[in-house]
Amino acid sequence: MSGEVAGEARGSAEAPGAVAGSRGGAHAADGESMHDGAAASGGPGGAGGAVTGSGRGSVGSTADGSGHGTVGSTAGGSGQGMAGGPVKPSGQGTADSTATPSGHETADGMAHPPGHGTAGSTTNPSGHGTAGGTASSTAKPPGHESVKGMAGGGFRVWAVSGMPEVARGDDLAKLIAAAEPGLVDGDVLLVTSKIVSKAEGRVVEASDREAAIDAETVRVVARRGALRIVENRQGLVMAAAGVDASNTPSGTVLLLPEDPDASARTIRDGLRDSLGVDVGVVVTDTFGRPWRAGLTDVAIGAAGVRVLDDLRGGTDAYGNPLSATVVATADELAAAGDLVKGKAAGLPVAVVRGLAHVVAEEHGEGARAMVRHARDDMFRLGTSEAVREAVTQRRTVRAFTDEPVDPGAVRRAVAAAVTAPAPHHTTPWRFVLLESEASRTGLLDAMRDAWIDDLRRDGKSEESIAKRVRRGDVLRNAPYLVVPCLVMDGSHTYGDVRRDAAEREMFVVAAGAGVQNFLVALAGERLGSAWVSSTMFCREVVREVLGLPEDWDPMGAVAVGHPAEEPRPRPDRDAGSFIEVR
Image 1 (cartoon, rainbow, N blue to C red):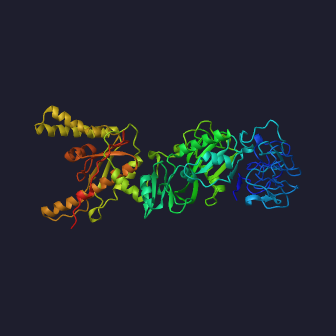
Image 2: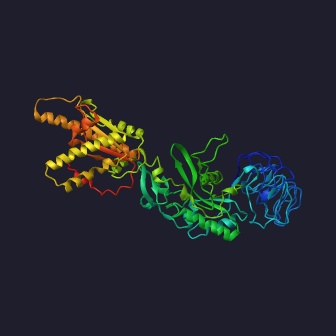
Image 3: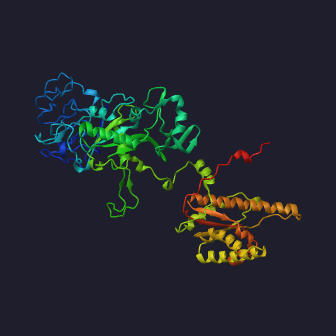
């Protein structure tokens, strides 16, 4: 069965006049008409159950010119079944008699197809029920009603039956209009991406699946055996780039639509042309989610839908300020549609009615606006991929913004640094954090003077000296400096030059490993860094200015800050050029 979901009132027959999907009970009592023809019911089968062939009947009312049957009346000319009346030639159900068409659920044995029946109401000229009201001679023609939202903020969602198998070149808007001609302004169409891909010819041979995944992949997020989670060319992070073998003929696989937002715009424009209605369109696909088992549908394309509801700046029910709440409305709509479409029922389109406030006049920015920017993505990579990327993406940054550096981030980087390997189970690392401007300026001024003295002794010209000294600006312009130091605590003394030199080299290697860990961890904190060797050339000066012990050997200095610009691409290096195999 195609099925209907009435939000928070699913499956129960409410009293006559209760609004389907109402969050507050019976919002439209007998004698009160529902707004602009929105149907009322307690679920699939309203109170007493109206008999209709298209689901557009009413209980306790008279039929209008559309000929949809009603309880206690004579049937209209369409031949739709009615309660208490004869069975019509179409074979559609009547009260206490025949089976429901297409397996749709009934109340008291009366046929009630998906989502259009009413309780205690009459039908308007389009055939859509209204709660407790009477037929209006001024109602809009079929397909032209204006839905401004159901009473109490409720909604209804149903799957569209009668959609044919979609082939390349098919006009989806015309197919949907033919299957669901009663669409009204403010409806939202939820269209499975599979039929969009089929209509757009995005079908390839299954034997080419891996090549198709490669072609659709921008970057690999995580890989576990043959499974790849990737970012595809639409900016979506999903398994296998969205290349899917389900709901497509054997031997073929489907690619996602080339531009799902453009596809949604085309469907929306086509429905406006065919039916004269302004609806929202969401193209959906099935995603897995981090931290959660199971799959759900999300929006990958949209037109005429406010895809995000930004509540920041408002307050909650208790008056607390909302500072981070941005609701993914389009994803919520997609998930609601999946409840009635299902995964294997052959129902690729669903309709949500009663949420007209999410529909916009313009096409809008589309679902692309829901893709998180890389800089804001805290989970951009899988664990092993993140480790590799962090190492290879560490870059020397020489220009920084004025944004302050979080001292906590630096301390976390130090914690990563001291996990480096070291000889004899020692801990040969010390990190001096220069967090005050005075400490940075005092050290850099003393180092500059010592360097100038060295260059003058080397016979360099004043012009050459000035040029060389300017190279130290990367440290002077950084908002934060760190001086890593080597200590030889726990080292062995052998008494001969060769072995004592090798012992020190072991500790120097360990110090270098610690510095590398530190730089990589800073990159993980989204901080840029530049390691500069200058403190190694004036260790006595550094120890004196910073008040360090005599056995602390400065091993350069690290400039830390927020990068002012993206680093230039790193030239590729062939690992084979650095390998010898024996």
